[in-house]
Length: 176
Image (cartoon, rainbow, N blue to C red; front, side, top):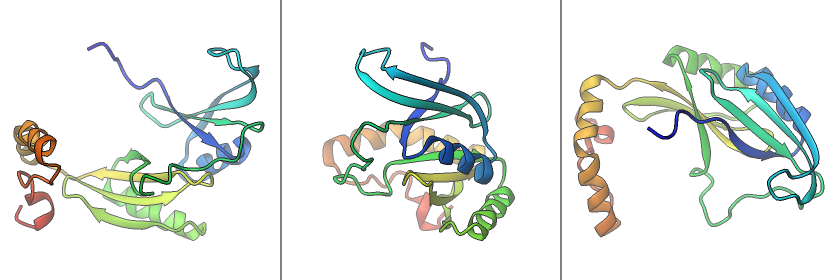
């Protein structure tokens, strides 16, 4: 494979320090690096920024840019708020439930857990308005095999019809 892993995923933030503190407090992410420049290295644009990096586990890095000279942050209003999100894996459903309780105790509104058959999730927003998902895998090897067997049929049918194919309806209709 050409790509070895995700080096980092970057989002914009309102306040870099608040973002670091929030992710440390609520998701136990370690603050690993900060880079600040007055000029963007790739474009040479004069645009001061603070670029922060957080350890998301297993060699994954979550990064943010604070851009004080740019217009205020906003989101893509042509895309539903539930679409754009970052999903992070936790080790078990028990951890998922415990984290939900911890977030709610801190005054953070949490949706879920939602049962997606092959994983269960909770959803909430960070202080920048980014939607986050924590997911705990629950799928069996047989479930994953069944999904693998139909993936191309599903994407080909969707490509032609733009209607949801029913090859994996068992995931949400309770027939599994």
